[in-house]
Length: 123
Image (cartoon, rainbow, N blue to C red; front, side):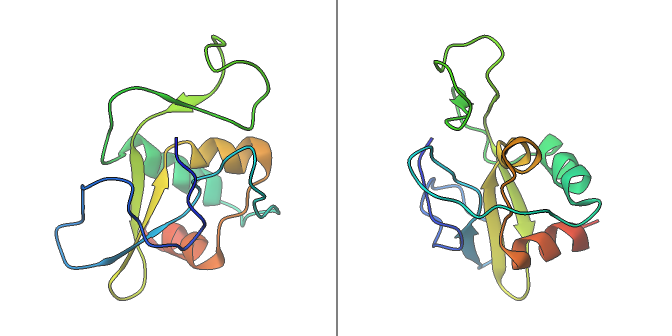
């Protein structure tokens, strides 16, 4: 999986939202890059998990968690494919890998506040 800084312009795939939008990256983490940590509000992980079950932009192959120790072919190493798309304020759409749920729940990743607000407001 590729690394993209939070809130940078989305360029990972050609799959774009139907309406004109500004698509921003969230949660494209890599083992060799620092990331923000901290607690997330109650209900955030559960809602993010719901959105992940309805993922979009599903790609071929699996992307393994680079933050977990061990080789990528380890049988129980977390993996995912696809993206979580969440509409933010105005024309903004956030694109996060499905693995963002794992990053928050296991590795203590704290996404940007505006993404958290969009996820919690998408219910």
